[in-house]
Length: 252
Length: 252
DNA sequence: CGAAGCATTGACCCTATTCAATTTTGGTGG
DNA sequence: CCACCAAAATTGAATAGGGTCAATGCTTCG
Image (cartoon, rainbow over all chains, first blue to last red):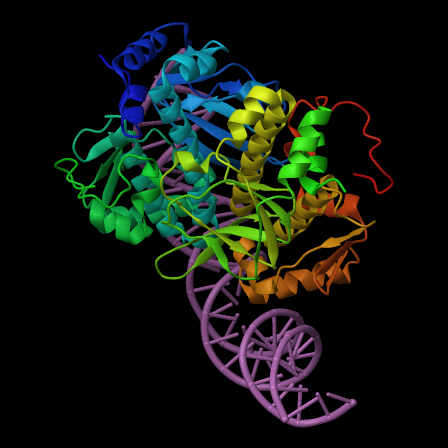
């Protein structure tokens, strides 16, 4: 069974067979389980080794002195953290398990070996770094310019599409294990207003959010509501983006 | 005259003499001037080569289809862009000159040479990448959690301190070449409210903003207003941050 | 079965937006 | 040096998007 990270990286760059095997092996070694809501790494801590998130969701977040908390990004199965974290000495933010998670720890020579022996993988990793940065920029754009409703729709699009890339969706459904409080912290709004906004989207027949599962009934319309431009999730050499995108059944 | 990038990178990692000479030489070659308000690189463009911003300010920004614009970060003299941009194929955002700027273009083998021959420089560049990402996260935090007043104070602290690291401040003054409209686009608020917020900070004797120059009368207090935690601007191996910071006269 | 956490609702309020007008500034040419 | 223009800054008044507070209902899980 190919791990989710492989599916994701393939979307950036075709991987050579040896690279895929090596990656699959690494994704099954040095595993560790962490229960939900536990910090993996805390603001101010020394940075740890690199990890692949194998299963479950995590978040990056930052807290202000007075307790306000901003969730900075979502980590889903197949995501890497923290690439080259050992270069920095201390964390400027925290990482926490949102659900129970399984992590694979990577050795410090991971990047060196990738560079020397698996150039296709190294390139894919660089693309991943770029996309991660692009996602962060898109969040800034959302928080600065989009309305509450647009932000919420945008986050749903992002998480659906990212899970799709990692082959984690089932038709129009995908996991969405955020409480409304966490959703509020991610979107820079209050839980009360998250609730109301969610109801609006539900009432309009765009989405449904139940039992930690998101169902998107009308993705094209949801994208329109969100002013969603999917370019940022695949800015890498894939094929430039102008080619016809036949992808799969459920239109991207 | 040592270029600003050298001052900045020294703050991350002690540079070897040959590295400094090489860098100084690069900062004086392949120069190009671009007038104010011209795009250097546009959303959707193919990515270009790496550059050092030698003189003047630039911005990264992103526009939504309906014209709303979010400024994502400020580029000041000594900043690099776009590191390893050639790995991505298309830009998810734009870069524009805010003032007239001078750029130094770097050859594509810049990073390779740095890696092979100037390991201290390579490490410093990695730190720079990390700090850049940390700044972006701090902007997300600001936009999501801080009030208008706090955001404004925070941006002023950030830009003052970053300029200080690049030896671009003069006492309590530094450049601040943003119109109120641009400030609004950076802070996710309207120009009208920027004006009012600015007047509040001025009235309280915290800052003054005139002739594109920012004067900070009470940095410690401004930091308190902003809930500013300077850790994120120097998360690299400097010395961890717990050592006594005697720095200079105007308390950091 | 109780308790804690989460979701939902209503009423009120405030921060920040919108719209529109006026003043100031800075740059240009005569 | 002044006149002129466009862009930027400033002001006021009305308004709306989203926050706050507080109560209630619903889950989940030990």
